[in-house]
Image (cartoon, rainbow, N blue to C red; front, side, top):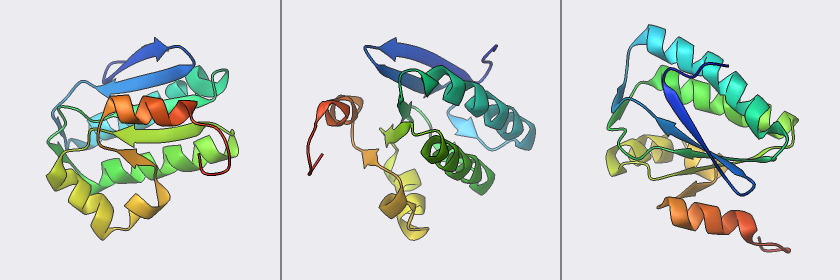
Length: 124
């Protein structure tokens, strides 16, 4: 699959996704990212670990948050571990207000998120 709005990087057994735009507000772009998320899930299917890195993303519409929730559900169904990281404070506030911070696994930095994939045991 050709990724126009996302950049994928394989690190060991984690597929890390970076967003090309600082502003994700345009409906057609969001629809395309939704389609690309399907390809991302396929990429992660063998690895079973997926990290969305929001570094550089300053604005995001609620429709984009809907795409993230759909990806989360798809990952759960496909038994892919999904984590998010480097979300700007003003965007993180939206995740908190919508209580998505309780559902999604969110980390301050990519390093912390990658380290959390390696943890094993009852308490992660």
